Image (cartoon, rainbow, N blue to C red; front, side, top):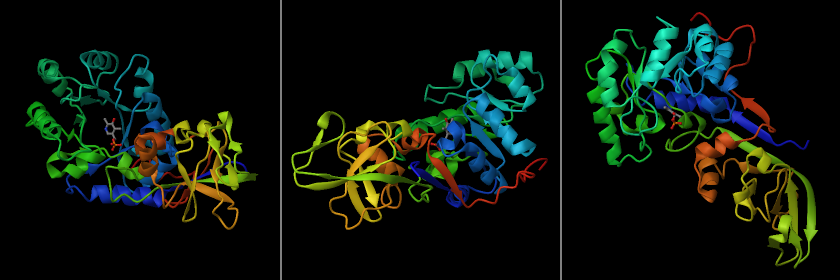
Length: 360
Ligand SMILES: *Cc1c(COP(=O)(O)O)cnc(C)c1O
């Protein structure tokens, strides 16, 4: 088989969710962020496992993602949409009972005019200057909005992955100033904010990356393993080259293996002659350019030709791989391509007749 295999450990996702849930008091509800296809791991399977484990608040980036999630999970859960209520979203929001997190006066107007009495949440800008209403706007419209019963009032931290950053406290103060005493449920923290401590938890938390085994949740259980099958090996004599543009030249007589994955599978070309695949416990350097569907590695030092080599596994997690090319685990995960055969371990067995949450 020439397709690489991506193993996704749903039990690890659930364990990570429970560990983050245990960071906050029982009055705080821990949600789950499953935007971007659950960070590339498959929103349907991941969200279903989480819902069966008791998660009732889900967050996605776009209305279309929310619509898909509603088909998967049925009616027993809240689905919040970070991008709010965009032109053209009205029918989907209404038909699938999504909760748009309204982030501007324009969106508030659009929502109230199109869908009176339909649920909504509010997004405030506490300093990140990305999404949400800032203080002047909020002060102007808060009475109107509050009289319509927002389901959730949220903001987002810019620097929560750095516990010592002054910005965390500044945003906490700004968020409290804008929302203290209003009496509506509040949410400030993603994975990083949960780890900052109870002051940051409020009523609902929104972990994403921590569920999927990434930093800043250092104690996270790894979730993904990516094995790339070896298609062919080559004897490469000293002085010969490997791959496009001859960028790697063998210094000694060498043996290389060619594996079945490349940049079309989300494995960045920046790993060319830089990254490492693993044969069990033994590292094998990538030699030459990563091409679209193929990668070559030096296996001169191996006793046997392995059936496959790991790009992600026990010796190299998503953040280790990210470090090699100067990116973050989030990007490694969300880049994982569509060609991999995705194998799910754990969670609960899939029974298409019951998702365990409808009408709950
Ligand atoms: C992506 C996102 C999250 C989840 O963040 P993680 O760092 O992955 O836990 C939470 N809230 C908002 C607004 C987001 O955009």
